[in-house]
Length: 156
Image 1 (cartoon, rainbow, N blue to C red):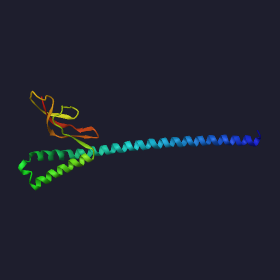
Image 2: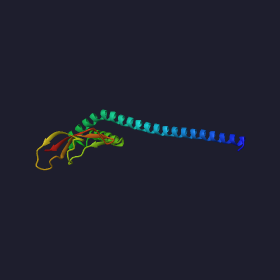
Image 3: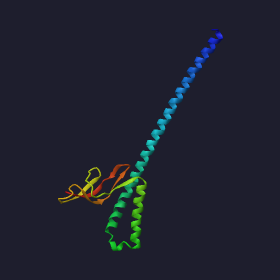
Image 4: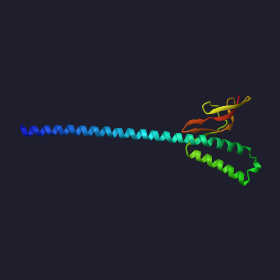
């Protein structure tokens, strides 16, 4: 091999090493960028969940009071325009929560579950032992996590 060819081969090797360094550096940066995007997505999701919980903290007492008020309305009074308006507002609030992924815990006839229920009263009966007979106050879940357990009456 001539000196000229040796010099060209050395330059080729140097360029190949440089290319590999640039390629590896680019791959690392791509991986770092993907990791950054994933962490930002997780952080954003956490923020959304926290905002939902903060909003729910403010709305739950209002919804509980509206629910108490609507249960106290006599059937013959439900045709009154003001009462209809109140019931529509309650329904709108419930619909907004559903749209935001906030679920109500509001089922009767199911087995008592301490993860989603809080017992306020037990009634004696030989049938349906351990079943939820009445929801006294609705509970709520945010993204599958219990935010507030439902307050219930169960069969003893």
